[in-house]
Image 1 (cartoon, rainbow, N blue to C red):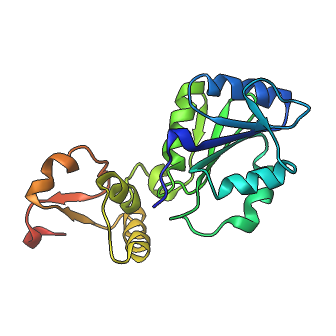
Image 2 (cartoon, rainbow, N blue to C red):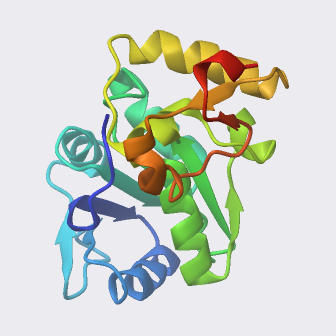
Image 3 (tube, helix red, strand yellow):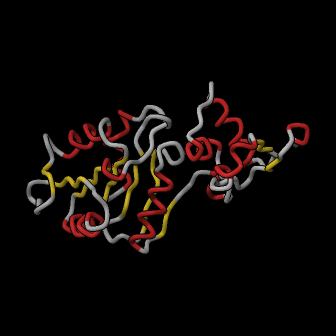
Length: 202
């Protein structure tokens, strides 16, 4: 699974307001900030071959991309590259006034939902997260797998099945080895039913 590394976040801004917001964020996070040559200030890197080309290059090299501007711009630029939520980078969009932070791509496995909440907290903005488990205040199997650094033989199928059960309000038991008791206590298991005996699964 792809996970956000703070030192591997690329930020793109296209307007003076976007540059101002980028500077606020860059003062708090080790971001790599890109903008046009016309708007470039100290600490910013000019687009290489234009905005779209630079963003598409970043999609394959950074663990997360932040766009300050319209959601549609990010969608149109990245659409040809979107492949898989388990490998695509997290993509987050922020309006240039810093009022809304939107988790656009790779919410769970890529870490976009967590990054969205973090950025919204920094800015005092509204986090916009639309994944069904999150809006129903539940965890998700891919989130739990990331928190435990777990590996599964068929994670894709398991995530689809279990997350669908969770949002359908079916009973989903969660059993863990006694050696993992401390680790599981640090994980988000909302929606799961903890059990300590395989015979007592729902």
